[in-house]
Length: 314
Image 1 (cartoon, rainbow, N blue to C red):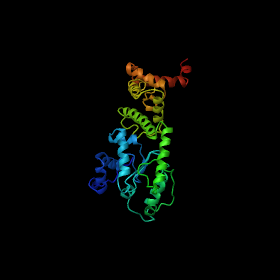
Image 2 (image 1 turned 90 degrees about the vertical axis):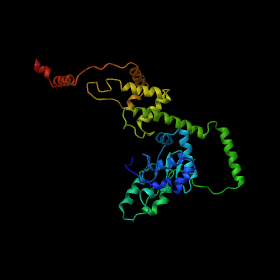
Image 3 (image 1 turned 120 degrees about the vertical axis):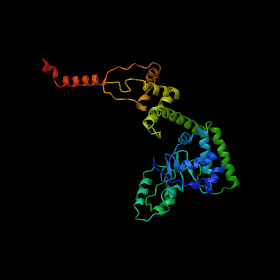
Image 4 (image 1 turned 60 degrees about the horizontal axis):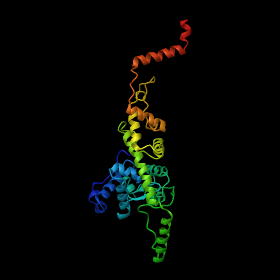
């Protein structure tokens, strides 16, 4: 996450800001969010799931998705583009505002920009970014992402004849008949699952505010929560297990090592763990009442025995 970002106050009264506001206040808010959100980078090309947008701007998932579509398709000048498959967003003018108009070829910042560009995961906007900024920032290695499937704000296509458009509409209607579950419904199901995982992570942060600041599908916590939900454990049950873990003396540090075991992945590692901590939430265990001094004495005695102290005593 960046420590700071450039954001011009004139955004709210400028041409682009007014266009976004005319589409609805949530679109103007989303435009400002895309420039300043925790996931953003100076290139303006970054991973941003729609469920993260909804969570961070405090909007229902459907509202965030609709606002994003309107921002990408409605704002003139190509304010933003979004790819549903890779969940990457690109703001074509953001690098110009965050980094600068152009640099000299010997400027070390050009090397840094190339490194940041090279480190990006594969996405459909890599080639377009290079074409937009290669001369300004003297980029030398172009990358190509996979083609856009159904992005918001995709480049316009050549005009087709009326017959071609009618043929395409007929083909699309036939495909919809063959596929009872539409793409939008599938995406909605996937988004719902992600929202449930984010809800569990959010509850965990009530105990550990700095934990899981931006959960990703590749993290072990995300995968474990997803597996438990697939097994039938509800969000409420997983949150209850988190509460139970934080009521369990052993996990709170009342153990021989004096260490805390409160990792989210530990809580949801398997169904047995979830159910054990659920029971502890309903019936909290009493602490063992072993003082620090007693624990130190036990540790010293164990070390003495392991060093041959028992033989010396004879």
